[in-house]
Amino acid sequence: MKNNIWIINQYCGSKVHGMNFRSWYFAKELKKKGYHPHIISASYSHLFYKLPITKGKFTLEDIDGIPFTWVKVSKYKGSQSIGRVLVMIQFMLNLFFLPKKKLKNPDVIIVSSLSPLPIINAYLWSIKYKAKLIFEVRDIWPLSLVEIGGFSKLNPLVLFFGWFEKFAYKKADKVISLLPNAKPHMESRGMNKDKFVHIPNGFNLEEMKKSKELDKSISNLIPKKKFIVGYTGSLGASNAMEYLIEASNQLENNENIHFVIFGKGQHLEKLKNNAKNNVSFLGQIDKSQIQSAISFFDVCYIGWHNHPLYRFGISPNKIFDYMYGGKPIIHSVNTFNDFVQIAEAGISIPPENPKEIANVVSEISKLEKEKLKEWGENGKKYVEENHTFSHLTELLISTFE
Image (cartoon, rainbow, N blue to C red; front, side, top):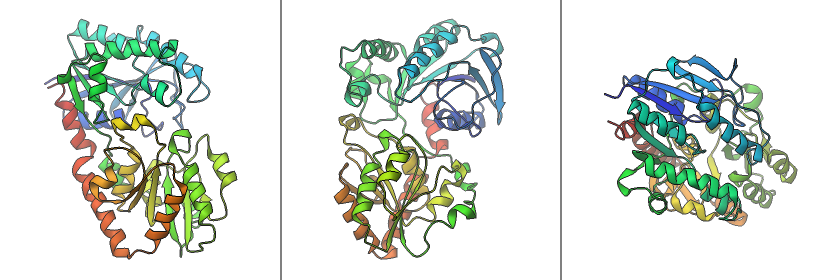
């Protein structure tokens, strides 16, 4: 049994600090199964709602029995800023000075991107400690910079990240992708086909069962006798929420339908300015209150842009929250692994189409409650069988045992 596992994820958070949670959930499940995970993360992320308290370049902290090493990095402004890229480089460079004597020698080293840069550190350590090296790909960088960001393939930044990407695919013992159709791309970048493992996103069942009620001051703002179309999550560029707002404007005169949005992000004020009186923006809520919020919805919404990058697949956490909440889903997407279709948990429509969103919302609001209940039950059954982190951790363990 390979006991000691280092998980290097620059953006890994916890229940104390906020997103990103995937590596944290894996660590929790690994510990239950007798392993000794140690998370190595950065002291700053634009997704944290509470920053860790750090002293010096490296700070060790125990969170619910999971040891963290926080690597001191600078703050940056904006998720798409050059400052963020510079901090990625800073994180990698600082890792060379990691106080390894304070950590148990690793049997397995997992590098979880967004940033592929720490693969260099991990590769050298894997040789020193004769450890298995696992590379987890969350977003396909630098291809996403080209296809979503509009960068040239010859841009120095694209070439820089591309070198690390190729290095990771060639040197890792296994390559994990959240996206089921990423294998051909990775092979074209030098990965041996036998290294590929698909492990999608999921949810923590224990946390779901410990859901906390929304504050009355918030829940009282949700209309009680209307059909509620709900959304919980980030309100940034990638969330394509402008199309839902346009759809809500088209339904402004339908007094039976109301839209409720929980979350914050860079596009919040813009969305508010474009919305009518049939939309309520109720702010960001704690992760533990998401299931309570969903209970007030009649149907949940999740939308995407029509990006070619989604040909590799999608794996959004939000959809699993919705499904576990037992609510039907309107999914505005163009991808082959559409979870709503797979689970028969609602209706899928093309992306970036406000008119279609409005039409579907109107149609669903007229359906019998039994049909909505059926979709909701289908989704809950599907995620409980396929997407708990207990199940996904077994898949992770299979990559190194």
